[in-house]
Structure formats: structure tokens, C-alpha cells
Length: 378
Image 1 (cartoon, rainbow, N blue to C red):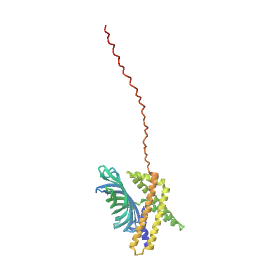
Image 2: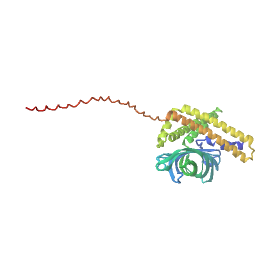
Image 3: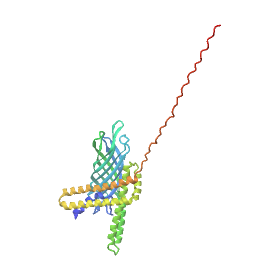
Image 4: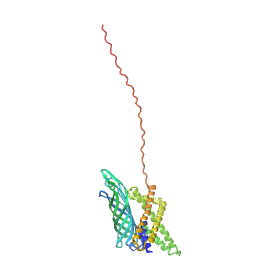
């Protein structure tokens, strides 16, 4: 049973988008601790000319800490700049990474963490070629990040995270050859525990009140119903964030608050279809998770560390597919309902003007006066 529990805690990380908090601090928790945070991201982007370009944006991540030392992290960030190296071409970097987290130091309210993440990054940039000419485009390649940071609990469910890492991406040089980019990313964020904390606080109060009832199944029934409702609420928040991020990227929106407001309205306008799609995808992810657990139990010996690591990483890789599927649902909805149509002005046809025919009248023949008569001799 211990092996199954560790497997579940290790594999469920990509599905987590919130933190289920209790009244105890994270370090004292006996079960898994979930948290999510969002904040500001600064990216020092490397270019083929070895010049650094500063990009600003947002970062969101989710953590699953399955003990006081180890956890898993899912990270997504988007950064942009309006002009790359004076080319007039805007640049942006969108990354989606996942990997383990280690907490080497725990000082009560303050923890130091290090992480190793891997996934994909989309880089939209430009490089000068000659004079006013430049090479611009988008490159999507494998990416990874190595770094760490500090998390400090302020009060109750509030915490602040500050971190930095080395981010490896890929883009083309002036000859269109793919080159690695050695980037530095700095992230500051606030851990969002308010919604989950309130919901689970209400759930605990309801279940505790139901235990005083004479109906034995009432506490269990309320607990199951409340868990389903919490799952739907957290999935709705996930939809809201996905739509906002899609709008920021695809519309090249500089004012992130506008995308957040627009996504909020569309989340509830299309909640039925979006929530149904996300729930179905979550079921598919659960099937992948169960298959990974079964393969772990069936084919890996208790002392087989290498086999457990291989199956665990393969299952994590497969769990990325449902997450990208959810992103695809958000992109499809954006294209159908949130895309602002661009009016194309067609040129007004100009009818050719035919000039009137020019009539050339014959010139009158010149009048030559007759010579005067010659005088006659007398």
C-alpha cells in the first residue's frame, strides 16, 4: 500500500491546479500538500548576437509536495517585448515545463527550494540580417530549466515565492540555423490559497456538523458532494486562466488585465461546453494515471528503482497530452468566440474614363489676294 500511495502522489502532479490546505502549516502536513501561485516574470533572452533582451510577463505554477523534502512542479510562463533589437518585430516566449522540486532547507515559515524542469517552449523573435532586413518567426522546441528560490509564509494561507532559473530555449540565427539560447528567468509570485482554503474550510464545517446527525451516511455523502463541487470550481478557475493566457498570446495583448477581464466573461458565457470538455479530458488523464499505477505494480519489483523511475517519467510524459488537449480546447474556443475580426477594406474599383473623341476640322485654305492689274500704256 505504501508503494501505491507514493506512486499516486508522484503521478498526480500534472493534474493539480490548486492547493488543498488545512489549518496545519505545510511542513507539518501528513498528507500531500497542493498549492498554486501566479505572479510577475522577467526573462533575459539570449540572442544569436549575444545581446540580452529583457522580456516581461506573467508566470503561473502548481506544486504537489508529497513530503517535507520532495514534490513536483508544473510551470507555465509568458513574457513579451514590443521591439526586438530595433527590428520593429515584437517578441514573446511561452513555456510549459514540469519536473521535481527538492526542499533542502526548512525554517518553519521559510523554505528554500531547487527544481529541475523540462517541457517545451515557443519562442517568437527576430534577428537582424543586414541593414533594415531581419529574420523573424516562431520556433517551438524542447526546453528545460534549472534553478530555485525561496517561499515565505506571510500569514495563514498567504505565501510569497521568489525564484530564478536558467532556461534553455532554441531560436534561429541570421542564417536560419537553429541555435540554443541561454536565458535567465526571475519570477516573483503570490501563492493562491484563498479559494481552496475557504472551500475546504466550509467542507470541514459541514462534515463536522453532519457527524452530529443520526444519519450515518450523511457525513460521507456531504464529503463526496463537496469534493465534486470543489473540483468543478477549481476547474472553472483553470478555464479562466487558460482563456486569459491564450488571449494574451494569440492577440499579442500588451494589457494583460484586458485579457483577464475578457476571459472572465467568456468563462461563464461558454461554461457548459468548456467545463464538459475539461471534465472529459480529466477523465482521460485519470485513466492514464491508473494505467501508470497498474504498470508500476505489475511490472516493477519493490526494489526496482530504475524501473519505477522509467515508468513514472513515461506516465508523466503521457499526462502532458491531456494538458495540451485542454489548451487546444481553449484555443479553439478563442478562435470561435473571442477572436476580434479584422475588417478588410477592399479597394474601390475605378471605372476607366473614356475621353470624348477629338474631331479635327480641316483648316481653311488661305485666301491669296489676286495681283492688281497692270497699268495700261496710253
